[in-house]
Image (cartoon, rainbow, N blue to C red):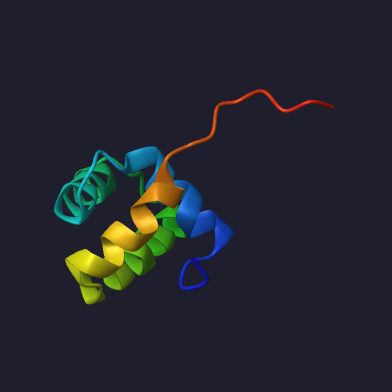
Length: 76
């Protein structure tokens, strides 16, 4: 998923509920709740939304498997 940074991917993992349209909707809704001093998160969200909007559904489907968090406990 080289198109997205680690931070962008993490944000998408948090708000992904299935489809590209749903993810865009969730991110848009989240932006409404940001405080004025949360400019970094606002900028990050805008960047992600721009990139998602420029993608086709097929492109999104090809990366969506990577947006599912891996909650498996790692050995360490």
